[in-house]
Amino acid sequence: MPELPEVEVVRRGLAEHAVGRVLEDVTVTHPRAVRRHVAGPADLSAQLTGLRIDAAHRRGKYLWLTFDEARSHRAGSDAPASAAAMDLALVVHLGMSGQMLVQPATAPVEKHAHIRATLDDGAELRFVDQRTFGGWSLAGLVEVDGSVVPDTVAHIARDPLDPRFDREAVVAAIRAKNTEIKRVLLDQTVVSGIGNIYADEALWRAGLHGTRIAASLTRPALRTLLDAVTAVMTEALAVGGTSFDALYVNVNGESGYFSRSLAAYGRENEPCDRCGALLIREQFMNRSSFSCPTCQRKPRRR
Ligand SMILES: [Zn+2]
Image 1 (cartoon, rainbow, N blue to C red):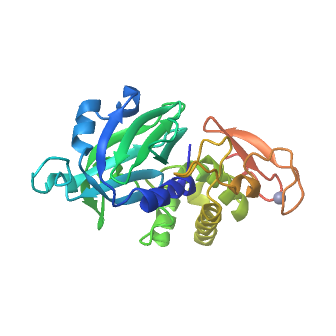
Image 2 (image 1 turned 180 degrees about the vertical axis):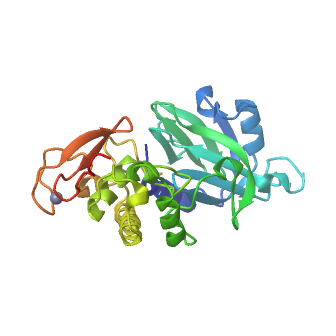
Image 3 (image 1 turned 180 degrees about the horizontal axis):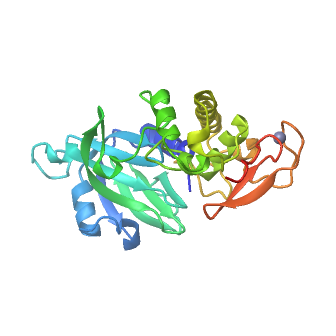
C-alpha cells in the first residue's frame, strides 16, 4: 500500500497538472474501479462532467479533489454555477497499485486504465490500476475539528505533516493504548499516513521494538518516535517516495527512490547501519516486520 509520502507525491502532481482544469468527459471502462460509488459509473461520470478542479487534498493516505464553479463550464450549457458541486469530493483510492496519470490524450492508453477523464487543456487524467483494489468514489464534504474533509475521511486522524498536527495530543492518545506500539502507529484514527514501511523505519530510528506496549513508553520516547516518523516521511517525500515494483509513480509515471535509503524495511540479514548486527524479519499483524535485534530490544514476555 502506498503510504503518506507516495500519496503526497501524487497529490503534488495533481496540484501541478490537473488543478484548474475542467473535466470535460469522464469514461469508466472498468466498473470495478467505481464500485464504491453505489449509484454506478454513469452517475459518477454525470456528476463529474463539467466540473473545474479547485484543489488536490490529502490526509494521511487519503487523497481527494474538490471543485468550483460547477456546471457553468459544461459544454453547451448556460446553467449557473451549482453550489452542490462545491460540497463534492472525488475521493481517489490508490489501493495496492492505483496510479493517477496525467497524459497527453494522444499517448497510448495503458493496459489497466480503468477511468479516463478528458481535461480542457487537451490532456487526460487516467486512473490506472493493475490489481483493481483502488478506484474513485464521490463523497460529501464535512467540517471536522476546523478542517473540511470528505465524510468518508472524517474519522481519520491528522498526519504528522499536517500543519495542525498536535504532537502532544497524539503522545497522550498513544499512551492510552494498552497494545503494541506498531499496531498503534498503523491505527489511522490515532495518527494517519503510516503503513508497514514507515512504521518499521521510524521504530528503527527511535530504537524501539514494535511489540513494546504503547502505554509503557515514556513521553520523551514517544516524542522521539513521532519525530522519527516525520523525519523519515519528509526524507522519502524529497526523493519521490518509495517504489518497489514501479507501481507507485507520480502523475508523469516516474518512480521514487527512497527504497535505496531504507534502514530496516526489507533488509533481513543485512547489517544494521547503526551497530552492524544482522537485521531480522518477524511476523506481526500478518505482515513482515524488520528490526535490529540489538538496537530494538524486544520486551520481556508479560
Ligand atoms: Zn542495530
